[in-house]
Image 1 (cartoon, rainbow, N blue to C red):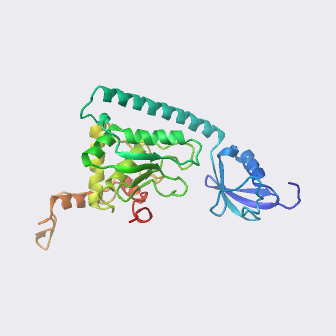
Image 2: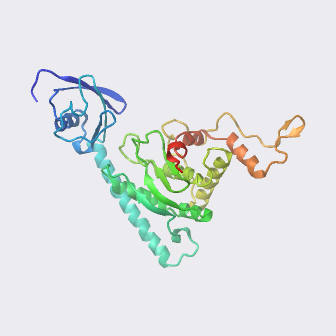
Length: 315
């Protein structure tokens, strides 16, 4: 790797652009070593994305993978400190899943008839992303969701079942938090933080799951959808004994959970031309319209971060 000529390569990492000077004959393995030293990223936890591709071999030259003078690439990775934190979190998540499973077996042996914990899971299978180093923690989180007694009771009361509960890819689907494909064929949820240095708080993921479960009935984010979504949140509080308080902003919008938009709900019938607007309309439609008029900013943010329409809906 000795030459007087160098390529200036622009690396995007955590929202900032860094310039690396690399010899044209540098290999991919040598480039990873340079990145490891520059950003304190273990080689095994790096992913370099060049023109949408990331499957490279250590012996590839940087030219062969598309890096030349002035080229741009994106680096995704987890620092050594964050790796240790994730491994610790993974161990805790696995232990929690074991405790939950043991507690559920105890309830079943005692014959807890009618109890939510005795209900079978309403999810057919669980899928995680194999390309990440900590699939055990992701599986433990999805397992916790599928075994959540309140989620089970909600789904049982609605006679809902979902084929696959899966982890949403945090890079391919970077702009959304989840989707429900074909009303229960599969539900995908964003589990990891944007920086890929940990997992999102459990209450936040539950809220997204409830949002996607509302798509079991309604495809569009209309008043009927929001009415059902709120009902599911109320039922979760009822069955779990705790509200789903916000643990931060949704999808990095900075919007807080209970902050209302500039369209407050006003009760009563409104008169146009001497006729009540709600005259002759069903209570269900009236309540659905009311739900649409009093959306919170969190609900708007979650609608925008939902991929349950368009690309993820197939026939």
